[in-house]
Amino acid sequence: MSKYLQLIAHPQELRAVLQWAIWHEPLYPRDPSKESDNLKRCYELLRYTSRSFAAVIEELAPELRQAVMLFYIILRGLDTVEDDMTIPNPVKLPILRSFHEVLTKEGWTFKDSREKDAVVLEEFDKVIHEFSLLKPIYKEIITDITKKMGNGMADYCEDEDFNKKGVNTIKDYDLYCHYVAGIVGEGLTRLSVSGGSADPRLLENPHLHNSMGLFLQKTNIIRDFHEDLVDNRKFWPKEVWSKYAESMEDFIRPEYTEAGVYCVSELVANALEHIPDCLYYLTAVKEQTLFNFCAIPQVMAIATLELVFQNKKVLTSHVKLRRGTSVMLIMRATTVRETYDIFQEYCHKIHARNSPKDPNYMRISIACAKVDQLIETVFPTDKGAKENAAKEEKAEEAASTKEILLVTLLFGGTLALTSSIMLGIAWYFGARFDLAFAAIKENILGIADTTRDEL
Image 1 (cartoon, rainbow, N blue to C red):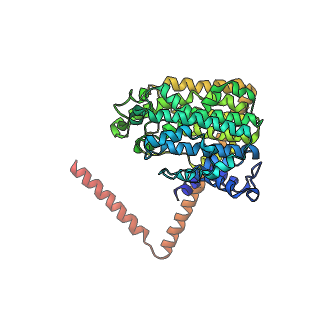
Image 2: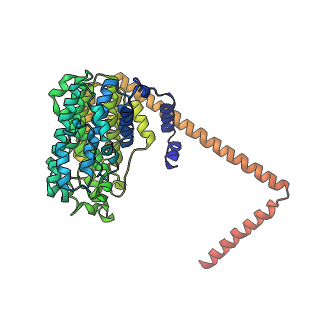
Image 3: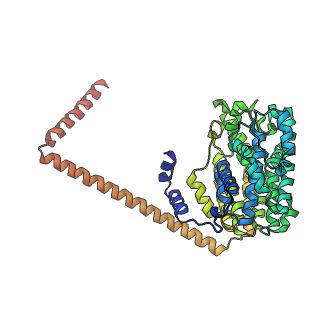
């Protein structure tokens, strides 16, 4: 019910949700009637594990869609093994390090996971079968990325210090995010370039796709602080949080709220510094559905980053974007220019809330300014257009003021008319207003006399 109330409270978002539900049509719609039962089930697993990613993956061009869908589910299976704290290391580590090998083992499944996405592992034989039908180049890329990610995850799981205390330094933080997200960016870039949907030069600049992954992962890590803490997982780097508290658990205590908010600010600043690379990457994506696929998670991330910034609720609960906001972002992020505008809008919101009292004030200001500078370089602002936009904004403000005044007058007039009618009806049925006014006058005079006597 709260979701519906949120939509009602935000009419623009309600409109966007209705537009998307009624009129949105994919450029390349799926035709399940032409799919095998195995393939249909793989898409069901995709939607089960991530509705947001499923929505954009299912709209990719057919050939790339199959490869990306299977790539996502395979990595979700790998991630499920890594996340499951009930699987002992002697069992977990060999699975992680050899997960790329099971992609060629027909019939392989794993039924000992207690994670919420365990169904992927339980029905992994269906994924393996569909994987075998992909083009050799796609299979080669997915296998290579799965091998890199599995070994990277195993290295961290083997590290007892990481298991007990989490990430230590910012360098470790970046490396962990690289293994769980940056490598995904590499795989998607290689798949896209192989399919002719992205500029091959992206492969010559690996820092760009690495930043795409790190920006998403760091945003999730900041947002999921409380949920991870409850599950005894710690991903905020000690090099950062130790400046503000003795332990990460301190941040859920009221007396550490301000310190926790400042810690979030430093992590937000760290994430903001990846934005220029992300924006450069998006300009090199050529095919429309692939652009949507790349841009939508990024605009969701910057919106989430703005949501968690200076938000003390992050320390004690799970915060997330409203559904209506998400739909509006999906509908907007269809061109490079519009995507840049979204980033600029949210960076401006972050900058507007940035407090000089915050020890990270200058770093955040610089990071936001760099985003403005990059966008101005790519899309220089025309002075005349800027002046016209300012005039239009003033005109809109004036119109809005008139609308508010009109609504106020209508409300006041309606209230006055209703009151007059009610008083008239009361008088008609014999109400003695003269006696009522006399009683009120007597009470007022009595209170005045009493007050004067007391003084």
